Image (cartoon, rainbow, N blue to C red; front, side, top):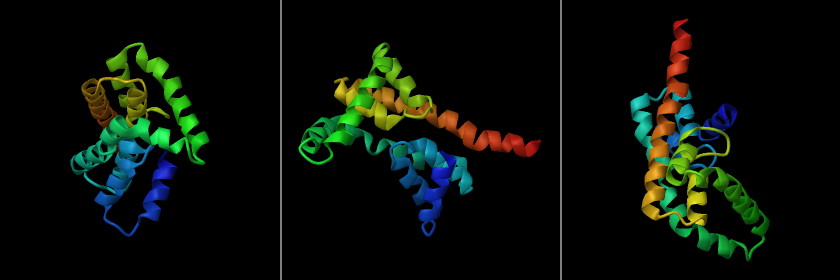
Length: 165
């Protein structure tokens, strides 16, 4: 992930660091995790980076929860039908893990920073499997907070500890 983040930093190089980490936090796959890695690479203070990355990660979530089914229906009538089918398959595969524990499962799925997890995929699962909007929103927000704590330690804590050695 760090190589991808570094590539995006290079591409976006002429703009302020805070905007770069906000943009990276908006991206699916990278999300807040990538934003905090970018912030660390760009030497943005952790306490300044956290709200920027959280807002960037949260911004797409209501649109996914509220509109993704209609967007998918519309896109299935275009050349993107294969991509939509793959996204639905991914959501269905991840749903099995989440549905065992419903809201707690969604929170953990969003919060534990592993490949293929995060707020985007969690929101997709919640929308396609008709979670209550309030429950999904709270679980996803809780997961984002959890991911923030974990990623701050990974992005800022570990490099600091290594520098002491």
